Image (cartoon, rainbow, N blue to C red):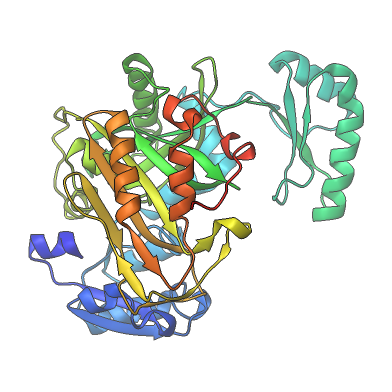
Length: 431
């Protein structure tokens, strides 16, 4: 909405009854209630969203980064209704939304993927042959379900037969499907993603990487750019791979190609997010590019020039969630009795919160994105610590003290860590 206002475009905010007091409702030129708190009754209800667009004469819809943002059917309905979906076309979303199809697509484009079996493993002999070819350690994964059930890491050949049988049995019990496949287990990886941007005329470019390695249960908590683990040569190779993956499906708009980066500097395609990311502000701050503006201009048919954008400095984002880190990060909805956001040079806060706003229990617990930019990573860490000290929230528990503790650790300061960082990080309430 801020970008649209700068472009002279009027906006419509849709909201559920749980979000009637959200800041986006107040900021929009018009606002339309589309239903009850449950997603299926509001933010996932395509007919109601289309109706809201039609009664307000909206000619485009920006899907944000949740709910229907990567829903190909929604993009298709928008198109058939004469409304521009600000994002890729439906077939592009489908090609990258299905992991098997995405893997096949990028393999054809010679983008590196995690080595593994070509299909489901039928017996021990096949498992042994596959593991021998790709090398130990390997991970056995169920073809159905998730949540870690049916997954087994095998470090040597003598463990394989037993692990395979156990994985198949657990998968059958959990999902009613005993099918499993084998992949190379990437030890101590980092999660590094590349921001891509493409127009309707076949031009594709990337805007560097974001390091999203600090995660809890696959949920990102801190993101930064550039990655402490990526040098210019690796950045060029990963960037080229991301551009190749996007170009392979004639991608349009902003998107993110996510990779696992191992300790030897090898990277492997994981997935592509066909939308703007929560963490996109760190890229905006380092590259001085409004990615939402680029999305809108691409949707309007503009051409990206592909000219070199000069990155500057280092940017870090901390996700401020309404959660209690002292008690297992349990949700902490409620009234923001005091909500004082930090400011000053190099500090940015994106938030829908304000004093007296009641954080609802219905949706994601993210209440603010705190972003800092500085000349170096060391200065960015110090600036973030200063900003966290200034960020005052009374009425609910937040992850602010958790971020303070984490940023002060020598391990984080060193920049040498992997996705298992929080497995050994013992949070204690800050004094």
